[in-house]
Structure formats: structure tokens, C-alpha cells
Image (cartoon, helix red, strand yellow):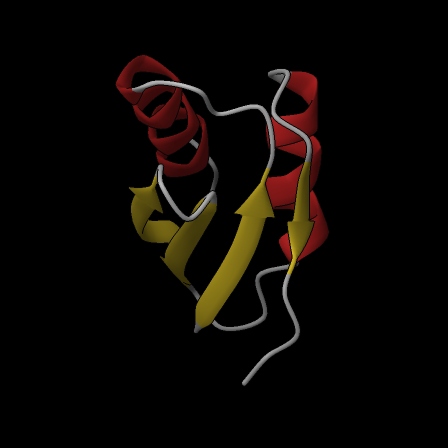
Length: 71
């Protein structure tokens, strides 16, 4: 399943890499890509993955995030 997140406080490539590492470390995340310029991340995760787990992990890492509505 695809999950799109909007992420705040990413200001450099290092921030984008940190966000990607946090996302990839979460259970059920298969792949994560971060677009620094757009302030977004796209995640491929196992079906039924709760986006709030991903946003909580990013919030704890200092990158406020919110899930975007499914398209």
C-alpha cells in the first residue's frame, strides 16, 4: 500500500536522509522515498499499515509529519 506524508522542518539533504532512515526502520515499510524540495515522502508498506505510526516516528525524530488523504 502507498502512503504519502507531508513533512516539515526538512532543510537539507541530511534531513532528507534522516527522514528516510527513520521511515525505513519502521516495521512493514518496504520502501521509502523523500522529496526534499516538495517536503514529502512516499512510502510503500504492507497492507493495513497505520500511517499514524510513521508520523509518530517522524515527530519523535523532530520532523513533524502528517498523512495525506489516499488518492
